[in-house]
Every structure is written in structure tokens, then in C-alpha cells.
Image (cartoon, rainbow, N blue to C red; front, side):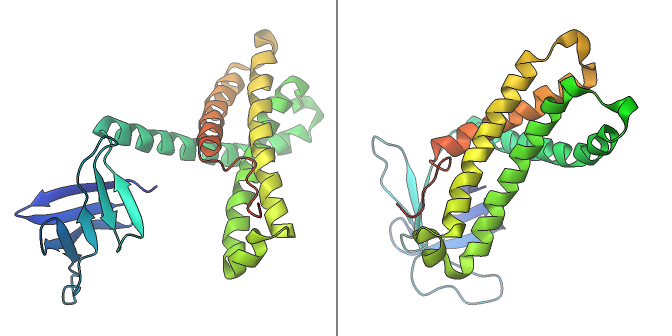
Length: 217
């Protein structure tokens, strides 16, 4: 979500990202650039700096040092975009499919106990993921108090991250243990696709320390 494409045209620096396209920056001195809005005069001071390359890579400082971007290979950026698209489509697939099998489960003729866990755990994982986002958004009005201390908000966020990882792991086990002969082929394919997306998401969140996050610590 934080990827950006940085390039130059006629000595002008252009940055495109998810929320902006070809944002214009003009050179000031050396490797410093100032933002030029489309309908307003250019900002009086530079807000983008090209830092000197070193052993850890090439970096750009944006917003008076508020954030720093690191250059990554194009293949890695494309891979991240593809992974994000795959995860979002899989989450949508889980939410769209859930009402059908829940309603079908109420009918005795359509009940399939062996497939229940293969569909239930991904749904629990997605609900917990939505809860993580919802808790974070609702806590934004008083972020420091609600998440900086042991409150119902911070504890709920901690538990939601644990539940997401646990449900994702349970989904992997359910797919692995389900007998092929007794599970419909399309259900198995569906489960393998969404479980792969959940594993990718869990690994990503675990890498950034979100799983088991104690915001009050």
C-alpha cells in the first residue's frame, strides 16, 4: 500500500502512488525538491531530498523527514502488487461465498461436516482481520489513550491478531487433513486458494510485528 514510483522528466521529479499520480517536485538546490500543487504556487521550502547512496541502498526522504522511502527492484514491487491483489480477491471470495454455504448448512440434505472446517476457519480469519481494521479506525479519535494503555480497545486488537493467525493456521490444517475422496473438488480448490492468501497475510503481518501486537507495551 505504501509503494511509489519515482522518476524524472526534464529535471522534474515525479512521484506516483496509490493516492496520487505524477505529483510534481521542482529542484531547489543539490538533491532537494519542493512540491508544486496543480492550482497553487510552489511550496517555499524543499520537502523531498535524495539521500546519498550507501551500503543499505538508495533512499528518498519525504515530507521534511517525516518518512523515508527505499528503492526496491521492479520485480519486487510488481510481486507485492500481485500478492496484494491476490489477497484482496481471496478475501472478497470468502465473504461472497460465506452466505451460500451458511444457508446451505441449515438444510440437512446439503450438510457436509467434512467441508465445514475448510470453509469456517477462513471466514473466522477474515472476520478477525476486519475487526483489526475496524478497531484501529475507531480508536483513531483518542489513539494514545485507547491503544497506548490496557483498555478494551488495545486488548481487543491484540486478541484479534492472535485469532487471525490461529484461524489461518487452522485453515491450513483443515485443508491438509481433509480426505480428497470425501470433499468436493471445487471446495478443495477454493480452500487451497483462500488458505494460501491467509498464509501470505499472516506471514506479512508477523514480519511487521502485528500478530500479537501489544500497543500498550
